[in-house]
Length: 257
Ligand SMILES: Cc1cc2nc3c(=O)[nH]c(=O)nc-3n(C[C@H](O)[C@H](O)[C@H](O)COP(=O)(O)OP(=O)(O)OC[C@H]3O[C@@H](n4cnc5c(N)ncnc54)[C@H](O)[C@@H]3O)c2cc1C
Image (cartoon, rainbow, N blue to C red; front, side):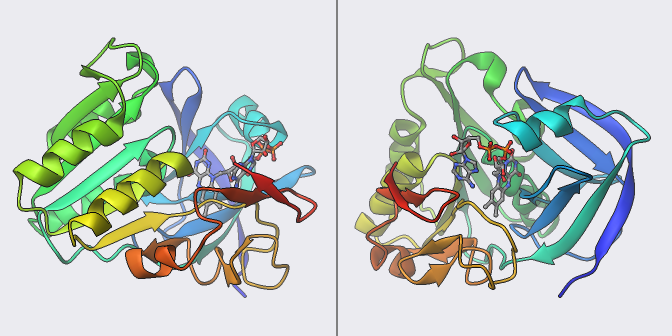
């Protein structure tokens, strides 16, 4: 089991009205797509994707008690970091098309940094409800061929990110697709890629307690998202009839998405 490191928050960056990045000095080796368990002293421990610029950072969307507590924390306060955990993206087949919405960019940003460093060509389709909720718009536009869709048309195409992703899959010779974001979006992206015989990977989110394959809270069709995932490929996802249909509650019950 990975040890728990206590780190001090060194910098905080507001990314969107509901998302903040929290930077700290951690220095552990990790691969793109891996995650850490973040311990908020006295409250909870939750999974978060890990990334690195000058410092290591997590990017947190405000959702419930634990993420709200992280949003309230300030520079100099301490959190626990346990990891890295889970598997990582395979980024070998280029050009790579990354499709993301919501807070999915938190997991994909490290994949962008790694693929760019290796000189890979990257297309990115980024979606959000409104322009102000587009996560990492500037960083992604510097490093990828970026296409944008918003529900209200305030930036890019008015409509769903899957529509522009479908166009890129048809107009470019895409080597592989990776996706992270709302599960309904990922399900569509996986189906679109599989239908065109393009290798595809999706990073799944399920409620997690231990992060190391003991508690089984994150189970999906017999696989554990924390240990077998969080990234699954098209063939694995095809076998998972819960994907895009059911999640599990904190009590372990199946619930329709
Ligand atoms: C591998 C992995 C990596 C993740 N990386 C990030 C990240 O980089 N940034 C980020 O902001 N979030 C990430 N998440 C999700 C994050 O862990 C949850 O949002 C967080 O645990 C919610 O805790 P909370 O106490 O704030 O909300 P809660 O009070 O626990 O929940 C608030 C609401 O969100 C829903 N919810 C909570 N957790 C999940 C979940 N895992 N899947 C679906 N719905 C959920 C609940 O049903 C509830 O409606 C990741 C999850 C996983 C599994």
